Amino acid sequence: MAPPFDPADLPTGVLMPLSPMVARILAPNPSPFTYTGTQTYLVGTDAVAVIDPGPDDAEHLAALNAGIGGRPVVAILCTHTHRDHSPGARPLSAMTGAPIIGCAPLTLNDDGPRADAAFDADYRPDRILADGEQVEGPDWVLEAVATPGHTSNHLCFALPQEQALFTGDHVMGWSTSVISPPDGDMSDYMRSMQRLMERDDIVFYPAHGDAVENPRRLVRGMMGHRKQREGQILRFLERNGESAIPDMVAEMYKGVDARLYGAAGRSVLAHLIDLNGRGMAAPGTDGRWRLS
View (tube, rainbow, N blue to C red):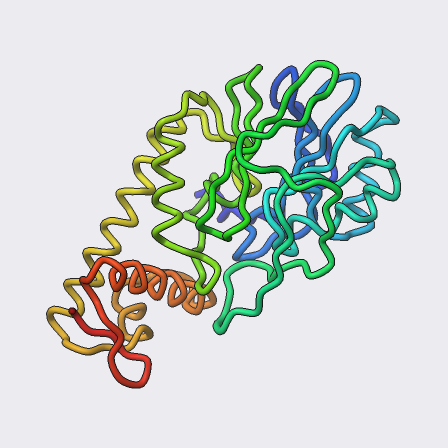
């Protein structure tokens, strides 16, 4: 029997070509929440864009500099401002002279355990991209696709030349995205997923996990998973009456790494807030929830 897969065994700091226009470099930050770590993408040939520069880590920044190889950097783009995605933008900008472009700044202290890094309070973009706005290099165009849900400021970036979409944490290649209120919003997330279903991309490049070569099938499955979880919550409340979120997590996430229970509770809360907005669930006493 093969030994269990350990994400920490994957090579970091190595430039891996994925297509004629795209290469990636894995940051050395694997964890139960980031899987193998944050994947930074280089787009272009003669001049490049850097997508999700990752943590402010000297080893990773040196690997990015080596991967760039002296080419001009047109832009450093961030999908969102969690600390495993955007802090590397500042030192990389200082190294290359490139502007920081992409999502809007967002600093928020939420009220529960997270499954991902907290927000990068020092993120200061030189230019904020609205939905549909573009950044251009000599042989590429990247277009912002607003995908709120995981965070309210989340953007994906489309590369029309290759019908590719850089999905950040909105769609990952190894797990569903955590939706953590108050900024994470399940209603927004499902609308954003539906938007991706209506696109014609043929490959997704997520910040965590492998490239997705049948993106609509994955998005359809992820939306179905969320609807199944919603059904589990409603059935739990129907059986048990007014209930606490940890009790729901204990039943619905059996077999899941206990270190992820706090994050699972945040996603359950996001579902409950969504259900409340649709008149199907309501807050009860002492943080408990009930059917409406």
